[in-house]
Length: 351
Image 1 (cartoon, rainbow, N blue to C red):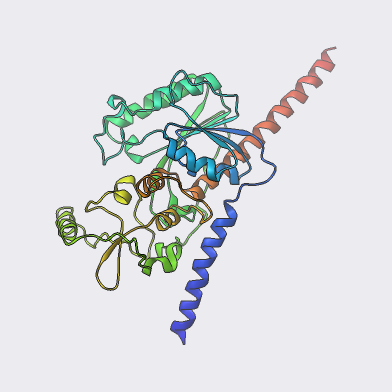
Image 2: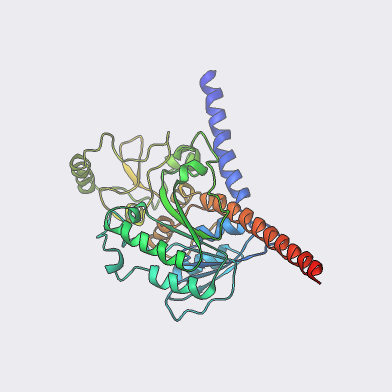
């Protein structure tokens, strides 16, 4: 009897998280305050901002990613290369997720020597558009080794533009995302911005997010071959894994990346079925682990969709940040109005 009650509670928890995510990430009505979204990807960062009541315009080089953005968000995404020639409208907020490959521990870590480095063009865009606040997301590797020096130079450049520059490592699991995903967020502002506090004490597990999909074997399911299984065993032995890297449904997922979602490698995200077979994660399962609501539909090939998901900022984490940006802008507006009122009073006294 107790087991049945526990099972029913678990099912209610699954439904609760899925439904709450779908509701909390719906675009808020009466949107105001324009947000420029550079290196927009499929719209994970913008989705959280629209749910907090912002209007977004995205800029993304990949047509497939932009197609997903345009199919799901109220704002539009323009297919454009982020460079010094890009003309941007005036906006109080600029958000960006420049390519992480130059700084990722999984890559060659060449920082500014990597042609994919988007920070130079991003800094030009910031200097030209002069937003009230800038929010940049990237991998923790940006703070390690010689890449830290590059990060510090970037922050110093923003300070010369008149910004207060702060950064913080945030784990998506602390904000209701069923995934341990640590990313660095740099925020350039004019004083008074505060990073969000964790919204959850108990993390959401992969099982709560995926639910019954975990045991579903569709006709187009992709399984690891015996050769792949052998490679996985060798990979895990070489990396001294204490437990298999199969998806554990009783805890948050490990970090989703383009590589482990769409590549047939030892690091592949996979679910071990009861019969021992390992099944690769499907698009909807991966999307839930990133906290994309079920109504968010991805465009393009399966490989492209998985890459879009792996590259994205989890929308629930974005929502927490967007709410803090909203508080910051409200406080700044009140400060400006108060200063203007004081100026008027002083002018009257002087007259």
